[in-house]
Image (cartoon, rainbow, N blue to C red; front, top):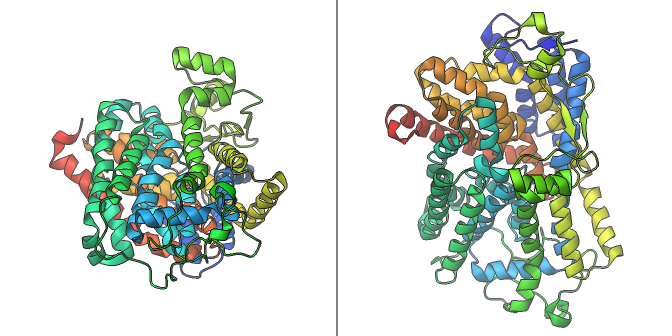
Length: 604
């Protein structure tokens, strides 16, 4: 039976809002206050979401169950698939001993932890975000920082904070493209507007990272590197988003920032290199671990892991150029593979086969998914069953037409699960890992053993991600997310500030800026037009503000703890990043307020 969402089932907007917030509140409290393990907190939140959606908001029980299953499957693939393959690649480099050389090369470039965080979490993470998104940069950056000797909490937290400014243009501009599709606003105008909001934050975030690590004194000591890293990224982000379009903003800006900072580190050093309290004394890479041609031999089982390995130092013997190139090759292969998978013709080939790739090159039309390469399944009991109603969407539901198949196809929410196993970002990471293993001449039996170890270690994190996404899907199809969002629309002239927090809420609930734009983009435009505000400004604010919610999204927290092998520390990590998230969102809110009422010339 069709079902029209209701956004005030209790007859009092504030009371319905409190009810809608109960599952998310329970999840956060059990994680951050009671310090439950993430899978138990996720299960509690999911149970509460099912009870609220069915018991109070009237969602059919069968639809709620189907939404939970759909979300769990999406959590396992593609999100869990990305994390699993990223950790497999990292484990491969640790097991073969090449990560020790990576640590040495980074230490010789800069032994300062603050500069290392800028290089990896901000610049390299932004490049990976631009190419793939969907949790990939957090998984890769957190694993790299942990391997370099960063404490797990810092490695995960700094990666989450850094993964903010690039997110709106991540995955080849997908969030902005989705926002244009649901709002009907020009994609060029939305790209330009986001590109005039986010550069301010792009300059702030590197400084924020350093202050979070070492305080204001620490920032004064490395301000040239901070300014160069964030400034280069911001300038390219502003130019590319306004002059070219949203697709390659992060790739170009992240690459420019990475190259500029790495080159700067060859001629500049901070006066006082900063390390974490408790960093162990530096120990050189053992010479006896280097085989013929400078290739590290596999580490013996039980040898030092990335978490316990001594911190490298620029005073230890410098690895040869050949050793450094060989050790970094898996990460270079990863960058090329992830970027290639996001390239239009390649994505069309992997999704629809050769005919789709040819058609894409000729016309630019999106490829029709192949039933073999990207089979899609309508979710039974959920597909085209739930209707969003006004004011979340422009037009109210015509209940007299609910039985009309054409009307249902046009208005009801789709629920289609796509198993795009070949074009998925996780597959590009797996491909990179297999190519790297061949390059490093890792025996097949040893490679299988590494994979089994990774899968065993990731079992609970994958289950947790599945439950987190199940919770998010239940809130989306149950309409409780819209009830929470509507609370922000009652703020009058302050709405430009709270429009940012509406986007923040969407990303915090779903873990995706794209999903937040799809959920709330239309609502943002409707509210802006009702209040006499520029809809391009407010719609872009949904995406620009949403990026600040990425670090507190449950799936992001779990990805970060899984990447640092710190399962059970999700509550500590949430407490670490929560206030950073609110503060950065507030700064973005003030920027949007200024653009709405003071510097209105900035709105295209």
